[in-house]
Image (cartoon, rainbow, N blue to C red; front, side, top):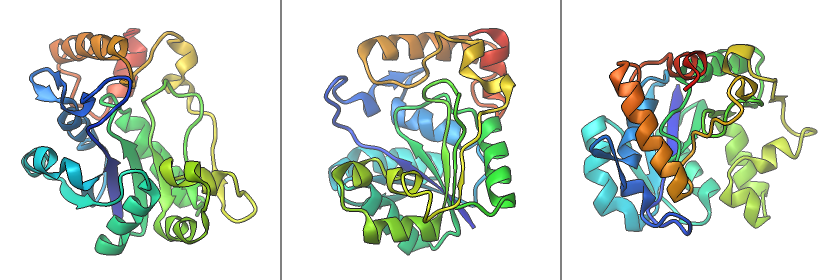
Length: 226
């Protein structure tokens, strides 16, 4: 079983309350969950701190995500709480500031990583905010036991890719059709007011093309030069 686990929180230093800022009439975190519905997975989970439950719960229920709470700063522990509750074999990791995930790239990455029997998979060379990571659930549980550095726990996967002697890694350059080099100015994450302004414009453009909710979003964005 593959669990798609989205990490999200409300507070943000550079863009306060960004998870609840509207894009196309819905909060950002909802748009991220909506985009992730096009990524194949057996169960979808929004993993958030306790202080987000009141705001996130109705949004998760509306879009069909389970809600699982855990520590605010120890995001690795938050993921492992969800793993222990739902017992997946694989985890697709996504973050709450990326509403334009390339679902087509995520599907290909998942197939490659599982075929190679790797513990961790991610593409390099994608536009910032376009990618996900695929991790074997057992590998995350091991990281939870062994990782001690704050950055390893806050960012979830550094313990894995910094210990190539312990884990089998699949980190290839993304296929050319999704590469950031084809759109060098493209930035798809939302971290600043400028990012948010651009995301609103991009969402409108994609919505006009009826492409915003398709699994071929990556091909559309790169191919159209958006």
